[in-house]
Image (cartoon, rainbow, N blue to C red; front, side, top):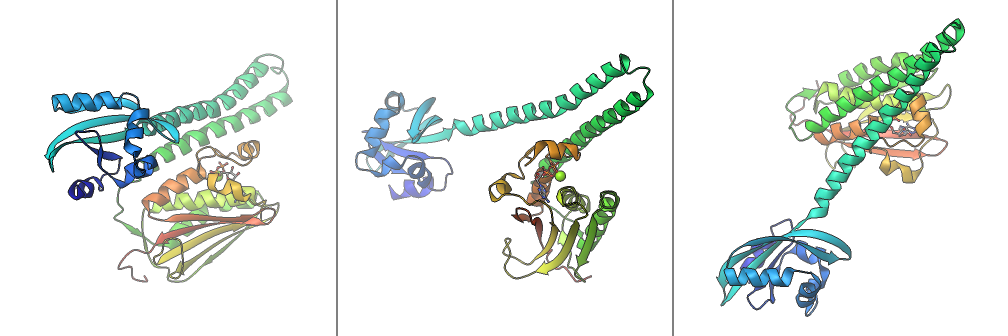
Length: 351
Ligand SMILES: Nc1ncnc2c1ncn2[C@@H]1O[C@H](COP(=O)(O)OP(=O)(O)O)[C@@H](O)[C@H]1O
Ligand SMILES: [Mg+2]
């Protein structure tokens, strides 16, 4: 049976090989992982007992010497639904062998519920500005129609809501673009200092307006990285905008870029671009959640600042494509550092 074990071990879903007398011939590593009781003496008999319908299915397959496919509920601590395909692979060492392949249906369900959740989130994000705008319109049509002051104020508020919706649609489009391209390989190389300058230029007005100081410290002769200029600029703009938004009044935002050939999370020669602020900081338990779509530590604060909750999700997807990594360090009340690591392009000369 060693040969069968060897073959099925390469498969990434649970596979079990069963003899004609319904004893276990072999199981791959994933099967043992998902159904640990298979490892015990008499474990397969118990597995058969509690997996409703499986016994009959095996009987049918043995009788008809044909492959069958059916849905069964198999338990492994959690209750899970699997589609099991049973296929006879003929006689082996004197016994007919059936191969059982288990496909986890909950994965499909998870994807479906993620999609439903996403649509619900988007609808909610669009509905609140719409509700606000229709309220203002009503007021303007009614009581405020002759009141110049009120009219000015309501029009200002409406403009703000429209801007929020525009930001949302722009970020949704960016997110879907970067997600769609996530698996495509990158051919071009870019100069990190060009990326940084373009991003700094884009946020300078925002920093000035909010009274924050921008400090930039770029090492000379940064090597090139593989990537797309536009996408990497977008990453830095998102990080800089966050640092400006969430740093304290008259605070400082610092961007530094350097080569990091020692220890870093990529384990290879990389450049590191770090954006740090002296803002409110982020609690440790929130850090892993930041790159989830629509996740904000303080919803109303983010909304007030024109945020959509999608910026860091976009950053994450761009970095996946660039084989890079985002590392967030923060301490409450002191500030945060968002560091982007990007692998240095091969044959990158220092020019
Ligand atoms: N530099 C930072 N300091 C403190 N909190 C931050 C910082 N950057 C991001 N955050 C938190 O992470 C959340 C998600 O960021 P992001 O995805 O850019 O969405 P948005 O900025 O639109 O709210 C923000 O709402 C904020 O709560
Ligand atoms: Mg943001």
